[in-house]
Image (tube, rainbow, N blue to C red; front, side, top):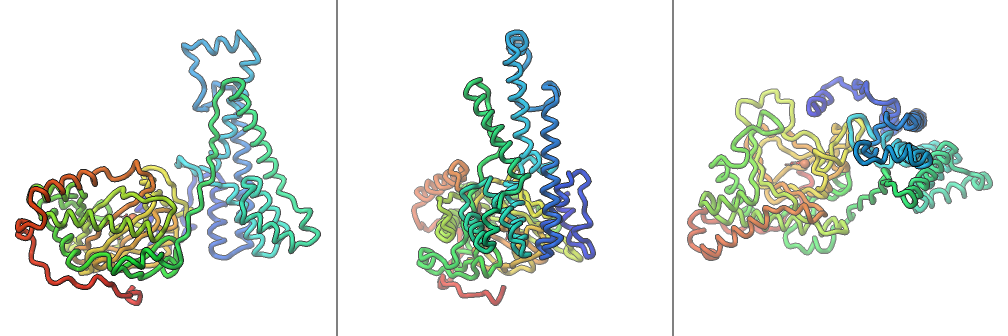
Length: 520
Ligand SMILES: O=C(O)CCC(=O)C(=O)O
Ligand SMILES: [Fe+2]
């Protein structure tokens, strides 16, 4: 369904306003319209819709809170104690009216606390838009400042600070506004609606924590702490990266019109690309990977994928040489180390999945093709192009932090990788694959991407995903390593056997890449 919608969106004459979600509460329509207007620079009407989104969402939260007052047995609070069997219900009614009142009140408070999360959760989603209200306030502050209404800007900034009193950037902005406003600045106060909201929520939390301490009830704050800001890509490559022999920076995030993305050349020598292409060929020959099935993304292509363990097993079975599987391990480690050095995310990266993937155009089925080889998506969240949000929840691979594509060839038609805005439509950069070229990027909403249709030939790449979570480290990797080492020991390093199953290599071309920006 999502892909169908994406297809309709790309059709000529179809506008974003052609789509309307009839189930959504009104604040979402106002919110989406506001973001779209602000994106287009229509500040006046954008501001109006932002205000409307905030007002409607506060109303929505209010009616959710009112619902919490319903008698307990009508509430689906998720954590009502079991009535049957444990005798607590009876004890509450017989043993003490006060306990019963307290229990009821705690349920009401818990339910009310969830209202802010429910309001920030789009229909059909399981997780809320992070920082929904603070983010609205921040946008209001920025938009008011842009239209020159500093007193409204400072009021919204002060309201934001009620949520995050130590936010340095906003504190500085408030100082600046106050300075510019002179005497009037000193009187500036947060908005009354937000002050009430925050004060009431804090008071309810206090009561819930009190009940936890003194009445033995439980409470888990549904509003989770703010996620840390995504670190920015360095504007110049790190010294470590430059020191890596033969690797050339082709385009940095700025040149790719985004953040946390990079194109590097020279990660594989032509001979190495050939070894990996041969491995893909050998695996396809025995119907491995996707067993020659059509692509999961398009009926016009065949898709073959090979994991590191399967590659090692093919070497063990003698279907392929062992150089390909070994290179799969070393090349992916090369990419991991480089990605970690380049982006310096502040935590170590582990490979969570390594996949040798080829996409082949199916002959005779390329006429008037309208679809993509790989529809636009983000790698660790479910992208919603309509709102521009990305839901870091299953079925997305939420633990992925950085993605890498190491390309192996260029002798095919179509198949360029492209990045878009979160609307999945506006292309911000394109990358032509070629042997040894790495495209690396952070896996979130900041990097939606897709692949244009492969209309002739076969396009092969090593697709890699990195994670900061050690528990998601690719298990098969260790098994593949063990299997290959045993095989290498048995056959002896660099033995004639290995030479026999692979063609003689031409003298290795220099690893140094060249700048190819003009070709992109
Ligand atoms: O092959 C490519 O260039 C991109 C593939 C991709 O985005 C993915 O597998 O998630
Ligand atoms: Fe991807």
